[in-house]
Image (cartoon, rainbow, N blue to C red; front, top):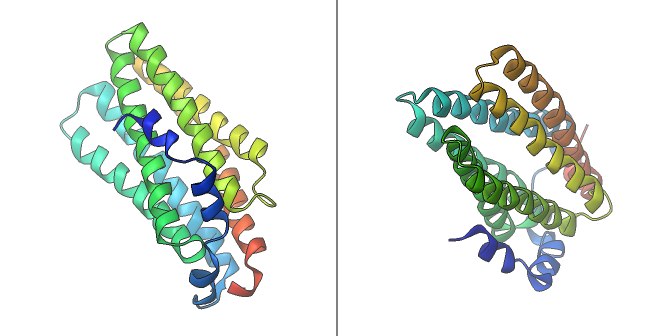
Length: 211
């Protein structure tokens, strides 16, 4: 499905339902150690950028593990969606997985276009990618507007994309030192975003966590 059509389905009724669907699932949860939850969220997003980097390297080098790497990267999107289900419900988790899957599929199309030096396709996929990033931010902020302000989430998502683009371009150009340096920036930024997400859930559902 065209990612833009999927965005169109995420109108106000869905976002409103997401913001108020967490009660039953969260109430049934066993209290979680805050430190463990914080670390688990970091691990999920570190997997996200690690497998993204491995995919970039495999795609640029046309390595035989490209398809398997893509499959592992896509699995991570389901892992992230599953991580929020105890708080926001099954449907919300599945919708987040869907948005994140689009994030990866668009990125793969963008990388392929960049390798092929197809400027028109690069521009089209870049527009789709940033629109998807905004949609993810809007979706999450609707669930937790107090602790995940929309403008902050949009900034985090867009920075993630920009840094990943820098990493990709450097790898394609064969500037491996710059590619590695860009990945270090991606890593630092994603930890900041992961901490924002875990802290927001902990603060939104304080009875569900323990020291």
